[in-house]
Length: 490
Image (cartoon, rainbow, N blue to C red):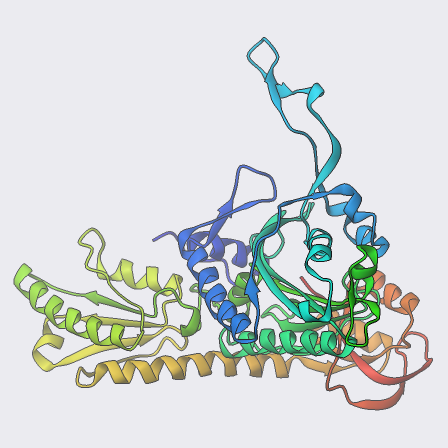
């Protein structure tokens, strides 16, 4: 194994970057700002996809696929949308290369596109142009579609998983006959994301609405879930947008309602991305490597044999294979690492780095005594136990580890939520402690921008279950009816 990781306390950013690469999750590619997601990292994303895709289908959605390229003119149809994405768009201007006669490949200037194409930063425009042909009557509604795809947003400062020029995601796009139906859909999908974050990723989240400044470009309301990372910074873990009739009006998507009148369709969109892999790493992992909740661990249990002879190895393997069969029947993913090219100590360090929740080790003495050594990744605890009913024990242990990881993250989050009653106190908490800060705000864009410019903290959300209380804005002293959630964020 390579040398250990930089400590989180020493340099959190360096720790994160080293962990992503040393745990074989991803690496920088030859294309600036883009990443190669390696098999182990991609298998975590596949696990996320599987859980979410199942939930989407359970809530009535179907998957579809729309083009990667979007005509530039589509973006000009919804003013706030184009303004929100204009600085992040990659633009295709030509469709052919040629040899210049000196062995160099150059762009063929005669192959210029009549209209430039945008590499999708998000798909609202191409999808609503398509929906115009799908919707004529209320009988055609609702349309509940999701797309798994890649998108491109031209980032200047990138970090693996958290912010890359190209990333993977899902984007739901739904069409409804009434405003109320669309709002209910927006809230339903936020609940799906929150449930996934907490019960699968083991990451506690706060559900809320974005302010006008932080809202998705083209939305009337943006709902979000906000998580707290171990360095005290927030991470937006999912968003669900109520788009109103903005895109239906922009693309002239009308339908005949039950009363026989023409009306514009009501819309939503919602999405999460590979940024969730970054959230998973930063919420749980330690200075020894990944700590993965069992529900998302590609390998939930690893078995390492420790033997002094081929005969002993064969006996250990027979016991291990029997256990593997029982674990697989319980839908537990298990790996038997019988490589003879690495010593057991190397393997222990490797699986600790990769965050495998449960490690089993079996040697000659265990064979004789009917025991096995079991190690938990989350607490680093080790014990020797009987092999009797071991599959049942491990199944329960994985459930315990899942809950333990969540509770640890929840306790950390709760210990790092504070209230600030004046601007000086607000800045002191940010600089000395970080975390989430509840503070009064006067509701103006000017004050929100001032706080962001001076402290780099943003309003993460106005929590949906927010307590109403009289107070004054920490900056202007103007009246306020509730505290909002601030933090520095990724």
